[in-house]
Each structure stands twice: as structure tokens, then as C-alpha cells.
Length: 449
Ligand code: GLY
Ligand code: MN
Ligand code: MN
Image (cartoon, rainbow, N blue to C red; front, side, top):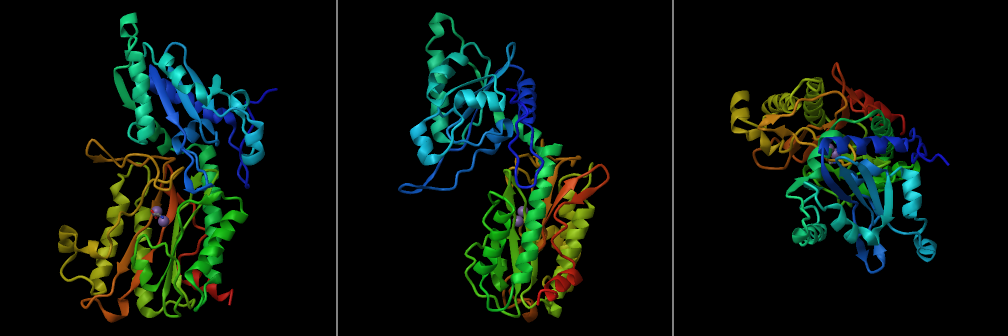
């Protein structure tokens, strides 16, 4: 049976051929040159007694394997006889009655295209052998204390053979540094999934806008989002949705989602699904009544203009900080016009007084993780954007009530967040399906009433 082209896709996404994962392993093998890399997947976590948190594999491990079972480790041997080895759970008919299908080493090797596969129970003994006479161990050091201890035991087991002439690796490298650079630029398979995750998340935001009414609770709107994610096949929310009415929007990580929605309030929703392990991340802020008040409109227009400016600054060749700096300039001008800040633009920028109302950065890498892998600065210089990178653009203004804040603006919190793909000529907004222009938002909500 030719199993190399079997696929794991679903939910309206073109399936990723299994060969793609093998090609990624070949790339990292070349980047290592020599040595052995070890990547465990994530552990299962108990919520209480016999109940587990929903299982989510490790992103690095998944990126190189496409394998979703817990209790699995990928080992890559670089050098003269390069190979990739999976350690995983054995078939166990009794456990499979309770927990479901397991591939087992032989099934996993055939289906996922590893050179070798072994039972997870053979890991310790095999590692001590594999690390003999290798120059380097590539390993996600510090990610998990149990794995750290285990890796040190392997190294010591090899060192114990010194008098037999066996040499232990004397370099310990972080395997994630090599992978971060690979993960930063998405391939066509990843982009197809991310576009679909973005579409589903945009549909969910549209549904949430139409479901919003004065007197409904934040959690009722959260339920609309989760319903829409799941009904399209998304496995999880990519992070817990923020559904923040009124002044709750000024709490950046508000997740209680428990309050009733006031007629004169705005509702900020930050929600995105995870599909085929890739995240979307969208924020929209809109009036509960369906119509922006003049004060809400004034603040919203500032954030929207800042977002347009940041998107305009997102292009291949730009430095990472350019979109942020473009957004900050517009936001600060807005803060001055709205009488939130005294003084001049230059003064506010220099003294960073704007941070009282805009205290986060304008974006982050996006991919398998919502705050995805990849450095932002290297050797003191901001990274340069290049085609295939995906990031968020998410300026906001958060105006907590205070004596020196104009009455009409107190408790207004607004963020507008889109996901963008850097292209040769600029960027493509992949979350454009969620309305954000004022007329668009009001029309969308009006038509549902
Ligand atoms: N939802 C998390 C973020 O916007 O970064
Ligand atoms: Mn974000
Ligand atoms: Mn977000």
C-alpha cells in the first residue's frame, strides 16, 4: 500500500499531504548538519480526577509530523545516515475501547512516512544508544522540567561509557531556534488552512454582531461564536474569547464574559478559531444598539485610521516595528484631538504618555500558535517582513474612567484586529470577511433587526 500521500485534512481545507511533513523534517535535518534532535509532543493534562483538559499536541512536534496522538516523541538523526524516528504508544485493544484508535509504531511509520518507529517505552534505552558519538543534542531545553531531567539522564548514560571510548554530545542546542525560522514563513498548505480559519472566524464575528442586543449577556454572544467555530469543524477556539461589554473592554485579557450588555455600550469581541491546528485572531468593537454614538464614533475612527495606517505599512521589506509606529502616530494624534492627552505629538511620543491608553504592541506572529513562533528582533534590529509571513494588526484605545478624562469617553475600549499575510507588494487581509468600517457594521446589524 502506498501510504505516503494519505492526508489528514478536514473541514473544507485542502488536505496537507503527508510528504509535506517529511520535507520539513528533511529541511531541519540539513539545517542541523550533524547531531540528534528530540521533540516530545505535549503531555496530557488532568483537569480533575479522571477528566482531562482537551488534548492539544505540541506545535513544533506537529509541524514536523502531522501526528496528533499524545505520548509521542520525534527523533531526528542528522549526518551521514539521516533518519527520522517516531516513538509512540503501542496498539492496545483494551485502551482503544476506552480512548479510541492508536496507530501504533508500525501503523504510524507507514502512514506518516517515518524511517523508523518504536514503542514509547523503548525511548530511554534507544536514546542512550543514539546519542553515542554524536556531536550535538538539539532539544527544547527548559520547556518541561521532566523532559529536561530525562535528557540529562540520556547524556549521563552516554558519558558513563567514556572508558569504552564512547563520546557524548558536548553541544546542547535549542532545536526551537531552527524551527522558529521555518515556522515564520508559511507554505501554501499552511496558508490554505489559515485562510479557512480566518473565514470561519469572520463568519462567527458576523453572527455575533447580529445576535447582540441590549439585555443579552456577554456569555450568550460567546456561545454564538463557539457554535459557529465548531459547526465549521474548528477543533478549538485558538484562545478563550474575550466578549467585553462597556468598560470591560478596558481589561485587556477579560474572559469572565458574564455581564449583561447595556444599550449605550460598545461590545469588544476578540475571538478566533483553531482549525487543523492553525489559529485565527480577530477583534471587532461595535455598538450594542447597532448605532455608534457620536463619542464612540470619534474614538472608533481614530482606531480604524490607525489600523489602516498599520496595514498600509505592512509589506515585504518593512521592519517589524513600522506598522506599530504608524499606528501609534495616528493613535496619539487622536488622543490629543480627543483631549485625552495634553501637549504635543512629539512630547507624547517621546515621553510615551500614550501608553496610558494604548499599552500593547500592534501585532504578533500568527500560525500554529496564536502568538506564533519567531523572533521579533535579531542582534538588536527588528526583523524584516518577507512574503509568506503572517501576523496580526491590532491597534486599540482603552479609556478607563478617571477625573481627567472627558465624560463622554469614560469606559470606552476599542480594538480592531485583523490577520494579514505579507506579500511581494504589500499585504493581504485574510480576515476581511468581518465588517469593520462604520457604515458596514451598522448596515450588517440593522439588517438583522
Ligand atoms: N487574542 C490575543 C491577542 O490578540 O493577541
Ligand atoms: Mn492578537
Ligand atoms: Mn486577539
